[in-house]
Each structure stands twice: as C-alpha cells, then as structure tokens.
Amino acid sequence: MKIPFLSIIVSFFVISLVFTSCLNSEDTVDYEIDPTIKSFSFDSIKIDSSHKVIGKNYPFSIDQIGHGDTALIFNTDSLPVNTKLSKVKVKFSTAGGVTYSKNGKDTVYSSTDSLDFSNPISFTVYAYNSDGSVIKKLYKISINVHKQDPDSLNWGTQAYYTGTGLTGKQKSIIINDKVFVFTDDGSAQIKVTSSDVNNGKSWTSLQAISGISGKADYSSVTLFKNSLYIVAGGNVYVSTNGTDWTKSNELSGNVTTLLTSFNGLLTGIKAVGTESKFCVTTDGQIWTTGETVPSDFPTANISATSYTLRTNANIHRAILIGDNPSLGVNDTIAVPWSTFDGKEWVDLSASTGYCPKTSNMSIIYYNSKFYAFGGKGDTGFNTFYASEEGRIWKEVEEKVCFPTSFAGRGEYSYVIDSNNFIWLIWSKTAQKNDEIWKGRINSLGFTAQ
Image (tube, rainbow, N blue to C red; front, side, top):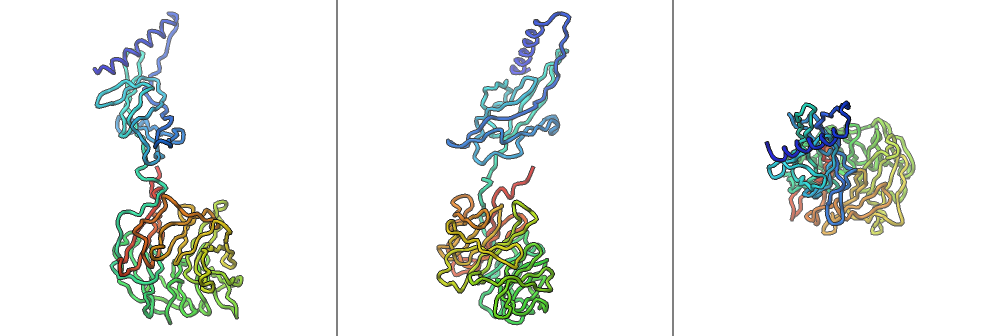
C-alpha cells in the first residue's frame, strides 16, 4: 500500500476517534459512504499580467458515470486562449479524502495546493466505511482552454486556385450547394464558372452564358427562390444552372437593375415614364412599383445583405451600398441604404462615424455585425469597418483583419457559406493568380457541447 493512501486511512481513523469520544456510549453514528465530488470550481486563473479568468463564469460539469470506472469533470465553455494552467487552485466538495497523481505518484490533496492542469489530472476520492473498509472513486479532471482566439478571423494558411484563368469584374452566388462566379472580362458576353461549395478546389471551365439577347450585367445577378435572375438590355432572365437562361416576359421591360432579394422579395429598379422607381415581386411574375429612386441612391457596383432585427426576429431588413455615377469624385462616403419592403429605401448617413468610400466595396452581415470592405491596389483590403446597426461605423483595429498579402489585389467577389466561411475569390492579374481564400471567425466554427 502506498504511503499517501496510508495517511488517508490514518486521518479517517483519527477523525473517527475524536468524534466518537464526544458521544455517549449509547449514541450511534451513521457514516456517509460517499466517495464522490459534488462540485468543482476555481477562483481565478491568470491569462497575463493584466488579465485573469474568473471561475464563476465557467461552471464545470461532473459526469459521475464517465468512462469505465473513471468519472469525468470538465468545463464545457472553454477558457480564453492563452490562459495559464500551470498553477491553479481549485475548490471542490466531497465527504472523503482526496489524492491526485503528481509525477507518477499519489499525493494527498491540500486546499493550498497549486496544480498543473496543462494536462488532465487524475483524482481519487476515498470514503471511510462504518465496517472499517475504505471505498474509492476515480476522477479525471480537465480544464479546457480555447486553442484559438474565438473572436479572431482566421484565413487559414493557403489559397485555392480556380485554374480557370478568371479575370475581370465578378459577382458570386451560392445556389444548390454550388458556388457560381459570374465575370465580365470584356468579352461580348459574361462568363460563369462553378464549384461544389464543399470543395472550392475544382472548378468548371469558364464559359459564356447563353439564351440572353445582348450583354448581361454581371453585377445584377441575384438569387431568388432557388433561381438566378439577371438583367440584360432592360429585360430579366432566369436560370437554374447559371449557364442557360430564359427570358421572363412578365418581369421584362425597362428594368434598370436588380438590387437584392430578402424575405421572399426580389427588388429592383425600373423606368416608369420619365422616372426611376423601386419595384418588388413576390412571385417572379408581377412587379409592384414603389417610391421614386432618390438622385443620390447607388445604382452601380451594388453589394447588399439582409438580416432580422434583434428586437423582433419576424422583421427582415435589407441594407446595400454601391456607387452613384452622378456624384463622380464627390462619392467619398459609403452611405448604406436600408429597406423593410423594397419599395422605399432610406439612407443611413451619419455626420460622424461614417464609413469611408473605397472602390468596389462590399457589405456583409456576419457574426451579428455589419462589415464593409473593399478597394484596389495598395489601398485595398487594409481593414474592415464594422457597425452594429449600419449607421455608425468604426475601423476594426484587431482580430477581424485581412492578411497583408491581400493588399494590391484587383477584382474580387465574395460569398458566405453555411459553415460561416467567407470566400474571397480573386481575379487573375499580371502579378497574382486567380485565388480563393476562406476565412471564418473562430467561434463560428466551434462545436456546441
């Protein structure tokens, strides 16, 4: 028998002598036979010289059944990345005595001990039986720490290459588990390539889309009710495979562009007499016109996103940004516009906290925030701008960032897949290949336990 175990037995024996000496000979005592840990916690653990983790914010689960003959104690919500586990003081409640494994030996636990939880520690709880025997229960105790900063945007370590020679301006859409990239490389018709959304490494050959009279506007392609819609020469065309298109006679005629789709609405702009009007359709058959398009509303290079209000999940809202050619060099602020019904849009301009304008900007709603980004050349993709509600914007200074290698890139498009990966798809230039990078905020990839 090991010395620590003997000391536990002796301590039980001493306690029982002291306790029984205080009793009358006729008194009887029922000893609790319960070698279990009923609660487990820690006060605080240091992260660095100025930060620490407060134990009450990270409750532990106790699986008394565990695996085999060993019960398990662990925290389901991992501690922040870089939390130091080399010296941890823990607290637990048990009716028995406790030993733990240290350097391969059993050591009697004291409440003043600082333990190294860099790896799980085995604890043994001993209970003193009234017949003089001792029973024990084994525990494996783990303190889990995030290996990654949950709030950081991780772009991985390498890019994928489309191998298609993708060039020119582009727009990407996910439909039926495929990523479609539509590009205008200056040819007579726009082209398309696609890849499985779970792959991204193998792409179809670039080919011109068919069935369209005139050249289609790549930037107008929009997903609506599991079909793709695009504008060419004032008409609307529909496709289910991205390559073969059919004219929609019901929606065609004087359509300037498509803006976005959300909450069962396809929204656009069409000419009505001498005015431009917002228009919506719910069935892909009939346009309903709305308000007159304001003179400062963006009509080119549009990027849109949508979300449900935090205060009411039944209310949907779309937000877009883009270029207004009529403003020319005065178009220096990225003013978002929002709508609840597609028929009336309002600008979210702000006198302070506005988002600076760069070329080819995009807006996304991601991880419960709006992010705006874009640009070309050395001034492009240097930073994200973030906003809670789309009006007041701040430059993101840490964690959600672009790799420095993104600077100097040219045309691009993006999609966000169901696994919360942001795909940035770059066109080929004289200096760079046509590449695909995937990034995700780490916490969005954590598995719930």
